[in-house]
Length: 406
Image (cartoon, rainbow, N blue to C red):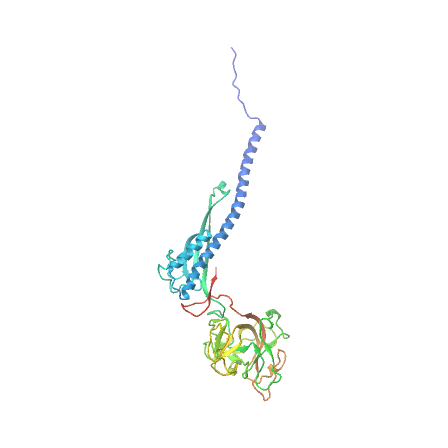
């Protein structure tokens, strides 16, 4: 009788090592796939986020377009806003999380008012204070390889706010900028009576030299004549801030469209030299930080009546195009940013007939009023200009546009 011995097969040391390597390799492959998945799906997610942001931008703009129509007097409703935002979401392949009305600054109305569902011509009225739309959009999408680490889907979120704003204006409310209440003609050929030859000055986007503020010095100082008689004379303007001194000391920063017909201000401009000098530094002919940039209107025509702002002609035509007298309107299509260095408005100012500053003015014979502003033109705005943030009431006669503010 033979006795069979039970044999126990054990892996050799080499076989054990190979098994451990397989486990490590398998684990490494999982890690590598996970890392590749994060790169691929991360890039894909970034693209989806951009798409979602574009969708939010489009939704807010679409809603603002309907509000723009409402401010212009069109009979549109909250239901029309709802249709516009729904169509924008569908076109961009995103979902609407929330869409609410805002005021002109992009701040949500209080209490919060959500844009209603799509009802062409129906639904509630658009809120009276609504001048913008804030949209929040989302988009869910499947991953490619991130599922290996348990991430099967991702969600992108974005928000955007668009408002309706005035187009092509100077100094909207609370902007903090200042406007000089004086306008000079685009082509200045006569300064007071008896000047032969008269100083010639052309203010034009192509011909006029707009310099960088950092380059301003005594070699490019500009001498702006303030003529009070004859064709091409200066006009002192009324922006509704009070008298001339108040216009300069406390500018009301009202919205002024470009172009516009601006009305004259009666009063004695001799009052305003000290007020203007509050905007200048202590050293003449030196560009200093204290020399502030003020907006100076440039006119191309005058009229006894007020035509439409976009009409540069005067009908019926005045017998003589003139910058003299009260109750005139000046057509202003150009605004220049003027860094003010000196102000001489009291009359008979010798500084205006002396360098530095071009052109050097000539004292007329018999003597007349010779005043001037000295400084540098560092900016120009010929409209229609940027869209600004400002309050608009329904039916206001201003051009409007859509501004994406965030």
